[in-house]
Amino acid sequence: MKALAVLEKHQYLKVSHRKQPTLLYKPLQDLGFNCHVQTGKSQAFEIFIWAEGPNTPAGIIHPNLATLNDATQKCGDS
Figure 1 (tube, rainbow, N blue to C red):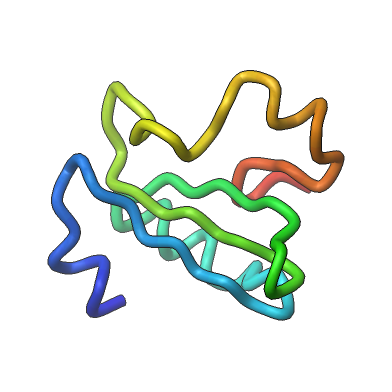
Figure 2: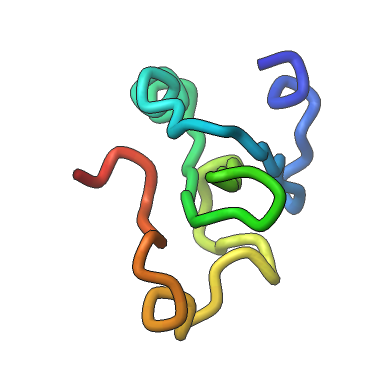
């Protein structure tokens, strides 16, 4: 949460984790952040977090990512 406090509008935070941090998703939304989850390479999950706005930070979510990776989803999706 400290890292998110200093995040610039054009930046994102990438979190690698062994489990999906589902309890984090609602507080992130409440604080005005968007997030995206995908299967990771070094850990089970990669979570990308950025401030809400009109644009997704470049390089995070590619249009064909969902077809390449079945585990791709927006935070909070069931």
